[in-house]
Length: 127
Image 1 (cartoon, helix red, strand yellow):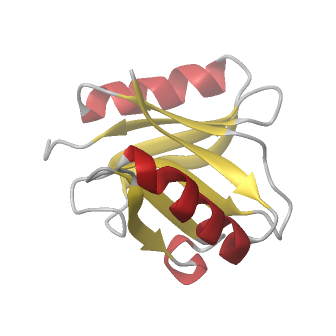
Image 2: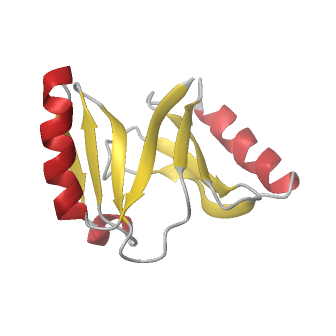
Image 3: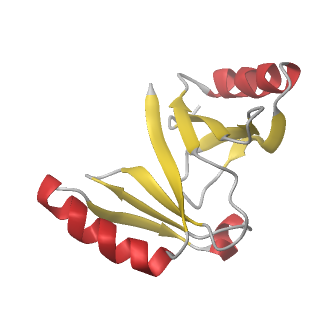
C-alpha cells in the first residue's frame, strides 16, 4: 500500500549525515539523490534497501507537510486517483505523467489534501 514517504528537513546535509548513520544498523542506506534542477523544485535524498522508501526533502524553502506515496496497480489508476482527489477538493500538485528522473517507468500524480499534505499515487510498471 505505501510505496514511500517523505519528510521535510531544515538542513539536507545535516540530515543526510544523521540518517546515514542512524539507518546503517538497519541495513538502510542512501540509494538515490534527486537535485532541485531535476525536480524543478526541491532536492531529495532517498534511503532504502535497493529502492528508496524514505525520502528527505530540502525544507529550506516552504515545506508542504508530509509526503506519502501510495502504490497504484496501473497508470489508469493513477489517472483516476488524480481526478477523484481533485473532485473531492484536493489541489493539484502534479498531473499524471512520467517522472523519468526517478526511473523510466515512474508514472505518478500528486495532490495536496485539505491540510496541505502531498499525496501521490505511483505506478512503476511500463504500462
